[in-house]
Structure formats: C-alpha cells, structure tokens
Image (tube, rainbow, N blue to C red; front, side):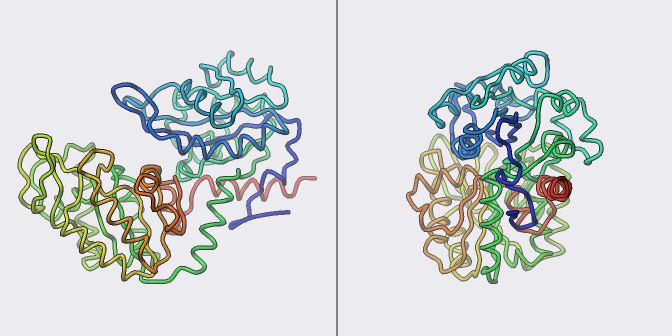
Length: 409
C-alpha cells in the first residue's frame, strides 16, 4: 500500500472505479469587488488534476468554500464551474444547492465520467464553524450527503488547517484518501525539510493577521523561525505594538492582535525584523516614508527601499527561506517593488526556498522567476502551520482514515 509522509491513503489505494466520490478541493478564488470577476485561476487549475483523474473512473462530486459570510467574495460557484470546465476541457455540471433536494437529486443522476460542482459549501451554516471529529460526523451536512456518496478524496491543502465538516466529518464515515495536490505537497515538504538547514528565515506578509499570529510562535518554538521578517498588514500590527504607528489600523479584533504582537516582541526580541520605511499612496502616487512618519489618510501598500535592502541581506544569509503573503499590493502599478525584489533575493540565494500562497504564486509568474524557487504552493496559512510542525485537521483526518480503512477487508 502506498503512503506518504504521515501515512495516508492515495486514490489508487481505495479502488474507486464506478463509485460516487466527493472531492473536497479549495478553489477559493480572489474576486474583483466591482465586477465580481474571478481574478486568479491557479487554484482551479491545480484542482483539475485530481478531478480529471477521477472522472475517468467514477462519478465526481466537487465541493469548495468561497469567501466569507458578509464579504464581497461570498458568492456562488457558478462562475467557478465555467472556469473548471475550461481547465478540464470537458463539461462540469453545476447545481445551485449544497445538500438540499436539488443537490441530492443531481448526485443520484450522475453517470460514471460526470463531474458535478456543488454550490459554495459556506452557504451551509455548519461549514462556517469548526468541529471535533465526533461532532463533525453528526452534523446535518454529513448526515444529508453520506447516503449518496461512497468515498471521499481530500485535496484542499490550502484549507488543511480548518476542521470543517466537509474535511473532518465525511472522512469519519466514508473511505477517504488524499488527492494529487495533497500527496504532492506532503511529499515535497518531506523532501525539502529533509535537506533544509538553518538559519531559518520566514518572510510573512499578506492580510490574514490571525493566521500569521497563530503560526509565528509555533515557527519560532519549533526552530523554523530564527528570523521573522514582517511585511504587509501583519507588519503594521507589530509596528503599532512597538509604538511606531499611531491611530487605528481598521482591523477586526485589532486590540487583541496588537496585544498578542506585543507579547511576541517581548518574548522574542531578537527574532523579529520590522519595516523601517513604507511605500504609501498619496494622491495616486507612491511616496516612501519612514515608518513613524505616516500621515492620516496614507494607504500603506508596500515596504520601502531601505527595508527591502535590509531584508534582502538577511534572505541571502539564510540556509532556508520561507515566504508567505506578498509584502505589498504588487498588482497596483508602482507598488510591486517590495514583492519583486524580495522574491528575486530568494531566487538568487543559495538557501532552500519555499513560497506559499496564491498571490505570491501569481507574482512569481508576473516577474518570471518561478523556476528559481525550490517549492511553490498555493496554500498559505496551512503551509505555514505545516512547516511549523503543527497538527492540521485535514492531515489528521487522512491519517485516521488510513488507519480505519487499511484494516478493512
């Protein structure tokens, strides 16, 4: 029997021919807030590999989250179905339902070779919560879908750190294995971490402050963060904790984030590096200013040139460099300098280099330096936590499933 990393089953292990299989992917895609257009199709293209292989032998039911409740990107997956059809070069059916009569009827009508994409799983209240394994298998979501499914393939590595019923519930009651993307990511991480050497430098940016704060302490404690170079929104939180930035950052849970950052700075004073200058937008133009000299109304969209020079030197002196989240809004003209130059510093270093997150993957394509990075993943927070050695619910679900179904006759 073939296993990877922490002993999980693969598609070949389960004998899925002729069965109705639920494939949990992550095609959560950036959305233009004005037009509603899907902006980056990389996750849809990645998901197509597993779906294509399964469609040749079974009935495929695909599920994914998109956006969060109350945000502009909390939308239907109808457009995703069209893009998935293009990526696969074959028809993908779509049903504007998740677990109601319409969805169940469509699943029952599938023939071998058919692909059906359910609507946004987050339209189900339970999929916006996290559960323990026993609780998850007793959710309405699992009880509704279980009778029309025969197996589960978990291929949502970017969501591996979330304990939603579609990840840790169905896997408790049906034969479950890892998809192509999950197996690829785990094998790559196993290979890279075998040869990786210190010092370990983590470059953390982007806008997901909660994910970054969750990961930073674990990275440091497990020896994967000798130096942590902060950029983006998370850097602003730490700059405020240090007293450099004044005023509000306009973040939910801002006070809690700043308090946590202050504790981390106190506990690990020699680990963190913060921007000394920032690229801000004023009247449609870029200005580079000292971190402590921001004006009210300044939009911080990048790190400044002095910060880039300092961070680049630290990157080139590292043994292993991990980067997650772009240092700036590189998609806006004039604010791609920090992202491009730090990625080029990684590409020209002798370190083992890992880049994670869909936005950075797009940046590597844009700056044409993809081939110079050792490993690239569209997973963001999940890969940070995996590298830090934290137990991820999806990996645990796959391990539990392997123990259960390997024993079955």
